[in-house]
Amino acid sequence: MKTTQELQTIARQVRRDILRMTTAAKSGHPGGSLGTTEWMVAMQFNLMEHDPAQFTMEGTGQDMLFVSQGHITPVIYSTMARRGYFPVSELATFRKFGTRLQGHPSTEHGLPGIRMASGSLGQGMSVGIGAALGKKMTGDKHLVYTLHGDGELQEGQIWEAVMFAGAKGIDNLISTVDYNHQQIDGSVEQVMDLGNLKVKFESFMWEVVVIENGNDMQQVLDGMARAKSLSGNGKPVCVLLCSQMGYGVDFMQNTNKYHGSVLGEEDLQKALAQLPVTEFGDY
Image (cartoon, rainbow, N blue to C red; front, top):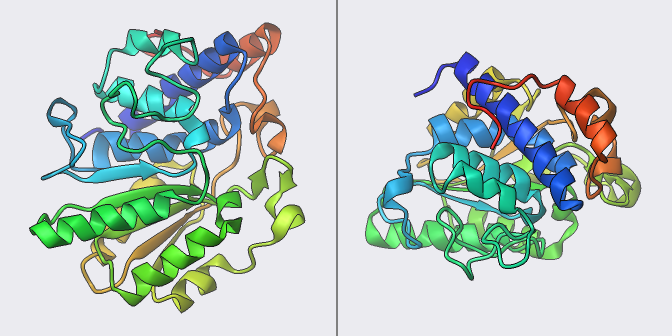
């Protein structure tokens, strides 16, 4: 287990990875990646029970994570590499032709840590429920985690899956919503207001945990520990992660501008100056 300070240092390095990867590729989605960095680092290094050396597609005997908002591959790949799923040097191949590190997660090349092709939004909840049911059928006591964008909750399939999970008591499922209020076309409230998500999930028979500051590492650790403590009690658990898109770089925060736009070289250097290099080093 890492200390909170150690996790914060890893998060800073992951942010450097995200920015360098997307600028080098001249494409990608840095905004949501930066906003979910604390959550992804906490999950990979402290919260999930998993062993990169023992990765299998079936996930038997380990916790499983499905990232439904597959466009945030920069943070997915960086945290996976830093955790030991594949060499950190491979981050330099992000979005290049033939790479295992596709712009959206792909299972085609057998990249360890990736169990579903995602990015076609709305599907990860259903996949997570299937995996959770599989664990119940085999007596595997480990948990299934999913991560979703708040804009993704505008997809109808999400609510069919939410209704099913609540009605069937899928209580080994913990689904986190990256609640940053931003999506590609503007604010979530402007595009299609989601209303009171806490009340909505509770009405579908879910337990709900709210992490008020999803970019505070200790709050993430405490909130996810609370979510885990609620599992196994007959209800699935939803975590509302109140994050800031673009967090960590002052001119990228709280705007949808960098949902799918990357920095040029000049702005990259300005951003990296706010994120001093760590002992882990750049790839």
